[in-house]
Image 1: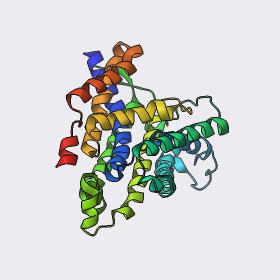
Image 2 (image 1 turned 180 degrees about the vertical axis):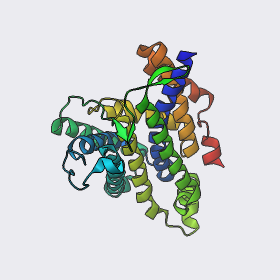
Image 3 (image 1 turned 45 degrees about the horizontal axis):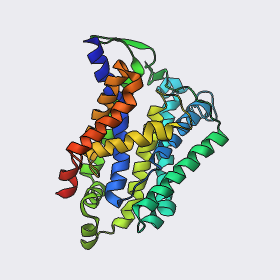
Length: 316
């Protein structure tokens, strides 16, 4: 019972991060038919941005110290909250720039060219991080308090036992971001254009909507989500140049494969499913977890190649 509950919580936490990554990737893939292998690099930049803000630009001790007379009195002492604001804004701007200078010239090119260029860009970003910051991993930067509430240490959970408090914050925070993204996609005009674009971008153009103008916003939102996933993920794992590929790019693509290309709901469900599968083997046989994850997706593809929600979202 203890193991089952622990696996469920760990799988939920890991799956939520996968889902956040998958949503960013699937809206770009579905709307623009653009394969962005630099998505993991955006996760990497988000993680390093969080590291920079939390440790170097802290409102308590860093470069921003003094702008608030008594930060802790207002419950805003944690620089992690500053990172939660700075990171998506920065990543959105990077995403918009990527759409203009990297993706747009490739819209009419083959998928192979898109893959080669974006993968090359990911390698450049990774190598730049290695040369400028170093190969050494930085330990996670999870805060000790948020809004005056202690979020570090262990919590005693029924049927689970001792479990890190911060992991529950990660689950809540990530699902809050996923919910906000879902509402934007489902309840706003921008979201309607994105959804329509994932189904038939040519029809959207024929209806008089200039979907090209939305491409930059879609890319920006996708980059912001990847950056937020990196920020949150950096509070759990060590931050190093290789995490963009190992911890982000591969899980993001597997999530889209399982959920179905272009489906936001599919990315959420696919992320949770993969998180659960990974958690089971991390508990029982960690040395096999990655192999089993790939094997699971390979078998899944044989059974349902369009993904869980692919036929509904794309073919409808």
